Length: 107
View: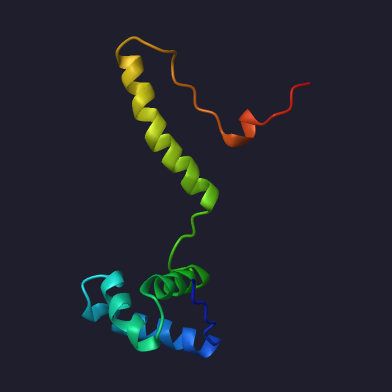
């Protein structure tokens, strides 16, 4: 059974501020989050999500959309295989298409 508790915005702000203020004392962001999360009473991944969302909101971190991440993962998986097949003289040349090009209606 999942335990869900809502933290107040004040607690979230305090937790994020604690991570940001003490980040330099730890070797990584994750280490800081793991240390501070139990003090706040939340799971480290939740606190990490709050910190990253705050960084995106303030322009300190670039936001990647979920769709872009899926495309990157698919390309990382499929392109090496296609390149290897082409190097062996098999298959057809690799053609790169954007998502919009592949979804054009046939007229």
